[in-house]
Length: 158
Image (cartoon, rainbow, N blue to C red):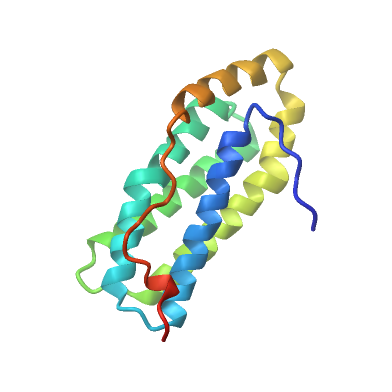
């Protein structure tokens, strides 16, 4: 499948999605390599606090349309992902099955937003609305940190 050409106005959110897919991949790699679940849990907590929570808020407050079914679905998925992350990070002995479920959920959610929801919104919103959204996102993404988590458990040899 070829990459989707995204309007510059919401491209910052699509770039975030790239890091979300890497987040899922890193979780899966850690599980495959038999990494201690507490190390993966720490990464999940880091990514939630430093990237994902803010990303969800930006989508919900800046991009999504009220009462639009696709936006409502995405918000529901955001809440489900948040609950699963909370379950994982608050558990003293985290379950890798839940981590696997999280990685799958994130990947599916991103694919839904990129392939369906963002494409729909680009068509539905006026150029003026998209420009305003783009301006707000630019302000928030000036120095947006990349995923610079120090413990690269996903890259270790098994």
